[in-house]
Amino acid sequence: MDKDIREHFWKAFQTSPFIMMSLQAGHAHAEPMTAQLDKDAHHAIWFFTKRDNRIGGGGKAMGQVMTRGHEVFACIDGTLVEETDPAVRDKHWNNAVEAWFPGGKADASVVMLRFEIEDAEVWTSEMGLKGAFKLLTGKPIKQGEAGEHALGAV
Image (tube, rainbow, N blue to C red; front, side):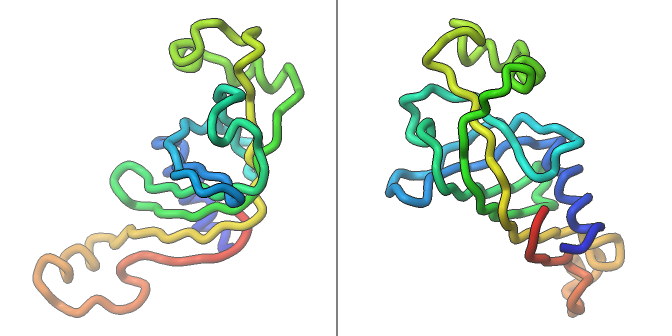
């Protein structure tokens, strides 16, 4: 994947860290999750959830991202596995997470999942001034003026 698109994805995802997650083996609907991001780990994202949640058992999964402002859309393929490193769990535990899980990080029913990203498809919709002007005035927009598209690892 192009480095610029990859960086654009992670920057936009950081400002709007929400993803719709579902297990590929099941038929349950996707659900919104708040991603715990690590700027040094572009191969994975983390989530806190309950063990009995529809994704709590982990497995092959798919996530869809649509960032605030709709400048980035992505479909991410990977595997959800339980994060067993207590240092990672401690690093990502915060007041917002605590609000969802008032039993605290020692609550045995709370699991931290790591989404190990294997592949992604990313679309950016950043038009720039010239593309936005053409859109507003009804003029034809050439390929590349309405955003970019890329496949590969994020």
